[in-house]
Amino acid sequence: MLSPEEAAHLLGVPTDTFFRWVRQGKILLKERNGKTGIPYKELEQWARERHIHLEPRREKGGPSREEEGNLLEACRRGGVFFGVKASSVEDFLARAVELVPLPPDVDRENLLDRLLQREHMASTALGEGVAVPHPRKPMAELEKPIVSTFFLAEPLDFHAMDGKPVRVVFLMLSPSTREHLKLLSQLAFFLQSPAARASLDQCGSEEEFFRVLETFGGEKT
Image 1 (cartoon, rainbow, N blue to C red):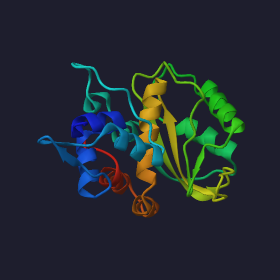
Image 2 (image 1 turned 90 degrees about the vertical axis):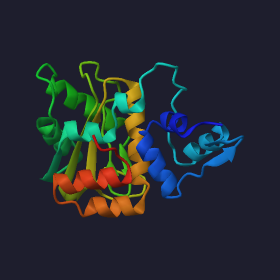
Image 3 (image 1 turned 180 degrees about the vertical axis):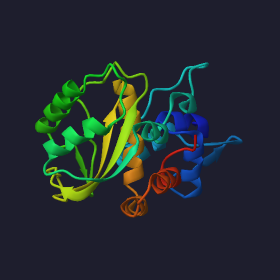
């Protein structure tokens, strides 16, 4: 039986987010031998059904999820951009690389090449009007992950599996594969909610965007 704190770590989300999912009825806790939690196999199945990557168990004394950061923090570092104009996916990526806040030692031209190579391999569109472009390999030159959010002026064809044009793009840059998978898991859970996607479409400011993210999948810093 996993405690709520252990389950939150395995899901790669803050404890507050996990308890919010419990209150919303998305996760059911059980009581056994005077302890409240969730069996590992049930959590594993729940995560598998939602395409969420489970983390390895944390060793005693290891850093908590709150210490390691989360999607909301990464989005705050990356910034939010509205009304971004682009005539093609390639044009968008070039504009995005110009806008994303990066350390001065990061080669933006090289980053663009890496993003284009990844996109040419397979579309990074997740469906439902959202895409998550990212380099194929982690960016070791970054100290912390960055997620820049772009609301497009006009939808773009990212060749999504569901055929829907993309309206919102999350450009994800991570210093390690581990961090990338954590953020992708949180983003996937956030986007699976119809209410979250509907609220996302109505965002007109950074404040509104972060409020939606806090409500449906992030944690206040």
